[in-house]
Length: 91
Image (tube, rainbow, N blue to C red; front, side, top):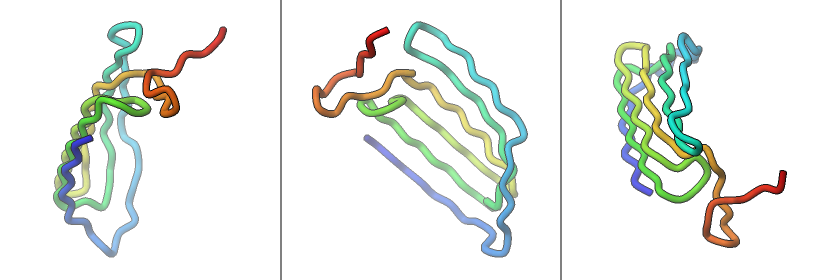
């Protein structure tokens, strides 16, 4: 996993809320999501890339002056750590 995180936040604010949420399934196991939040972030950037694990994929978040935008392209499956593969469920 690769994770880069930079954040300068307002320590006197606990502001957090969701303004917009949108998600769409692209293939049987892939999805894309876009979110907009109101936060206490003055400046923030986060990049997370994973190839194994629950909802592995690419997540990019950027924030400026109290608002953050998140874009997330991910796998909808969960990871089975015992078998080192995607989990399968009986239906």
